[in-house]
Length: 188
Image: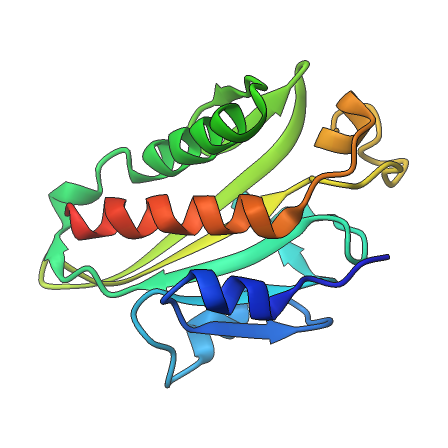
C-alpha cells in the first residue's frame, strides 16, 4: 500500500494541492471549501463516500486509485462548456495512450471503458451566474492499481493493473491529466 507522493505532485504542478489520507468526498469538500484556489486539487488516497453521476456511489480502495476534484474559476460564457465532460474524458484517454499505449473507450458523456468495463468516471458540476460559469468542479475517479472489486461491481469494473498486471505510478498519471486540464481551461 503506497500513499501518494504529494511532494512529487507539488514540485511538478503549480496547482494548489489539498491532500487527505482519507475523506468522504473530494467533490463535496471542493464545493464547500471557501479558500480553494483556481486550479486547486483536492485529492485523497481513500474516498469513502465517492459520488458518481445520478447520485451513484463510486467505489475505491485505499492507495490504489485516483480520486480527486479539480476546481477552476473559468469566468466564461456557459456556451463554452458544451461537451466539456467529453473533452475531459478525451484528455484522460490521451494521457493513458501517451504514457502507456493503451486505448480507452469513451462511453458518453462521462465514462471511460477498457475491455468493455468501466475504468474511469467523471463528475462535472458548474456554478453559474447570469450565463457565466463562475466555478467548475471536475471529479475524477480512475481505477489504476485496484485488483479486487466489490461484488456489486466486479463484473462491470476494471483497472489498469487488473487488465495489464503491471503496477502503475499514480502521480505520473495525475500530473499529466492536470497539466492538460490547465491548458483546456486556459483555452476557454
